[in-house]
Length: 422
Picture (tube, rainbow, N blue to C red):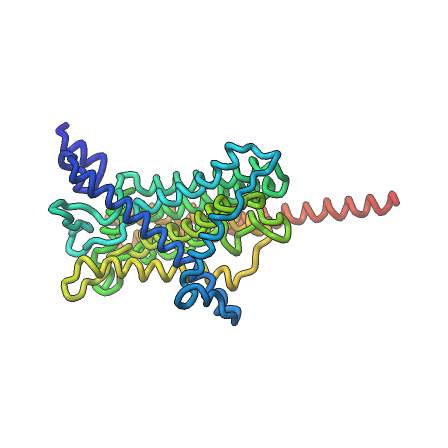
């Protein structure tokens, strides 16, 4: 195997196919710096945006003093937290306690490096652009296992929360971290199954190729070929719900329920370490929104006007990103917090079975299309899948109701027995 072919297998970015020199290293370094700066600016904007939108929902003013429309309030809060005293509890594990915030922050940034934020995907261009005489992609990296990297980083994020609660040496942070680990592990299954639905359609783990597949012409020539449409809308809904639970955002913010846990896993943190957790939460919100746009809504792909191929893809990406940032804020402003048993029931008893059934349906549909079974075969697949959904749903609900009746009967029997003793 020659060197260029081997490089193409390791990285899809054309910049890394040819022999790598100082120019290529400089371009990649520039990508990293620009991505980090843009992500930090976006996070600062997101904090201000959430406070202003929630205040509008609640008929309040919100930040309005630091800078125009209060847009510099986040910067002021960050400076204040940076100069506050850093307190470390006496009974804490000092090394782990200080390391935990970074374990939450770093995975959030590493997820963003695989997101295409620009590039012309029309006419089979694959998002390639020319910078300093070299062809490259408008993303930091495009590994062939891009989506697996996203799933791995989202799994690693729980370690920062879990270790923060454990290392604090206090029971309330520990309870918050235990809740977080159970919640995030539970919803990772549904999240992964919804991603599998996209992979069945795109046939690739590369985020660049997933976007390129959605840039093709859709049904009737004017309906977008977005995966949210092609996969039947259900995987998108599951991904949005599971992603919200992964982010520990309302209505799934039970890991930091103030009424029960004081402040959750970061109760003992102060100063810059608390700011890092705060930053990681909002950075995860931005990166999760970017992943949703990439997987289901075509990423930066969209129509190009006036020949400005370097501008319009980034504009489309930012507009789509803004929509989902607003949706996450909308959730916070309108939805009440779930009970923990409702949280677990939603994940294990509804999202996972529906996601698994929908993956099986999409796989059967693809087989019918590949084998050219025709309209009748496809209709039979849909009918069988619908019947399986109905039967499986009925059996699952029957089992849940039976267990609920038995539990109530045991509780009533215990109550009657204790009453007779008294």
